Image 1 (spheres, rainbow, N blue to C red):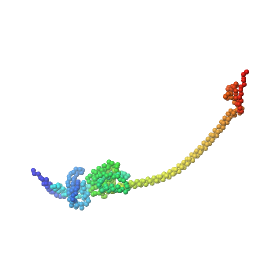
Image 2: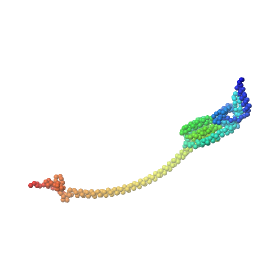
Image 3: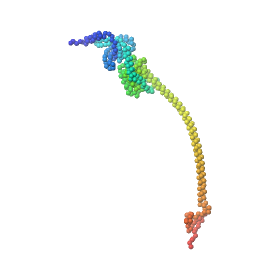
Image 4: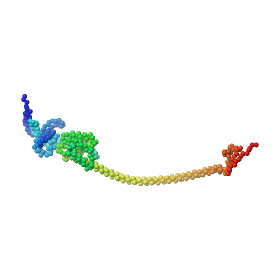
Length: 412
């Protein structure tokens, strides 16, 4: 059997495709990758299963420079918003096959309404799922601290919005010192979901170190916001134990991330200004509290001074009254004591005089004057007859002298 050459095979395939696909087809596919060269657009397309995991088909498409320019004049910036990796587009194209370059889809027009409709439907489904999980306003219920100073920032370090945010905080008119930590993540593209979710989880592990999470990015096309119309990011924001403020750089569009955040601002600068304003209100409340405390303290001090003055006067009066009362009592007790002492002394004086008189009456000299005589023999006073000895000398003491008698000899 003679083999067919590869070229002949491709020529046959080219004829088959040309005969069967002789008209422009309306096709839908997801953009995987885009390259431009000399104004021409080279686009890799794919279709995945419903879970977005398995690849079902892929192809390449070309949009020539003249076609792009025509469509750009018709749709303006919307065209560039649609032509992004990860976006599903509806387009009209010719199916062509080349012996060297293979199958190619030559794009003739793009339908932005198809993409916008798909995005709108996807948003509605995500919002409904968040409502069913009761997560739509979960983060809005998180309590903000009294003052915000420690801030975890999820952004790209090269984003202009990050620089604007940092500079605005640095130039705070209220001289508030902020401590910020950057958690780097892609702000657009297919890595946005995984990186933003991972950084929120990292921050959650050390939530005690922060007062607030901010997610910020610079401007861009409307389709760039689709990366924040994301269920996984929305759930991470909603379930965060820290308040999450979002500023992703659009003045008119609202993403699902904006809807579930605690606070949503249009730009990173607006987020920084809102933080500053929040803290200004705290400082104002602090100043008001300080003034109130000062006024209350002054009134309390005046009241206390008046009260102390009254107490001092009352104490002075009471102490004087108490002293006067005690003085009068002491005076009465002194008089009573003096009278009692006087009476006691008079009584004892009388007793003493009586005793003195009695002692005088009992004195031997006084007794002798009354006619009594004291009889003594030796050194002994004789008061009983049985003690008298006739044979011994006796001394008779009178009031005016003593007489000694000697016994006469009684022998016969």
